[in-house]
Amino acid sequence: MARILLVEDDEALARGLTAALRGEGYSVDSALDGESALEMARDEPYAVITLDVNLPDMSGFDVLKSLRANGCRAPILMLTARDSVEDRVRGLDLGADDYLLKPFEPAELAARLRALLRRPVSDPSPVISVGNLQIDRSRCVIWVSGEQIDLRRREWVLLERLVVRVGKVVSKDRLAAEVFGFDEAVAPNAIEVYIARLRRKLGPTGPAIRTMRGLGYVMENTPAAEA
Image (cartoon, rainbow, N blue to C red; front, side, top):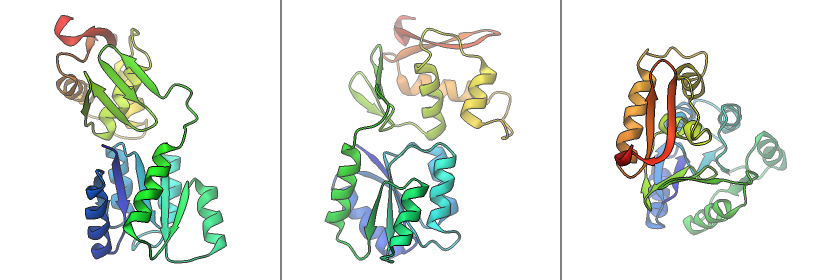
């Protein structure tokens, strides 16, 4: 199930679109302003983000710019009531993938989302397998033994950093820098907490994450139950 972030300040419209998209089989989170959208995008891996241009606290263009600057790779569909070539060019230059002019039917929005989800990605190997774990880096989706697992944004980043270095020890400091950034104050046991969450969510059939005392962590091909 693809996870969508809907950023729309009109509460009635947001409720209607959320219901329609859930009816199409999507998992939908909604944000009514730009600051909430940025916070949610930091915490969750979304397959697609729909972003209204006119928001109460900041421009949708500013949200778009911040998302891309923070490394968000999800396709972004801009929603706007202004049929302006300048706006469309500006959004596309900032990293938007598509535009949808208001008013529109929910069916058209769903069709645009399907098209964005079908687009090929530049990563030549977006799906990586480690034992019973499969991770689709382009869609931010993981499966363990065929079952899809939901992860929070930072859990996803931590898992991806371990997966791309499978069999290699990654230091705690390096993981902290990649998950939280260099400027954020981080509790001394933050990585341990996230490692524990990952182990719990991956379960006994998922790949083992071994603690190498004084060195860091290593992901192994062996299932956790056999490690």
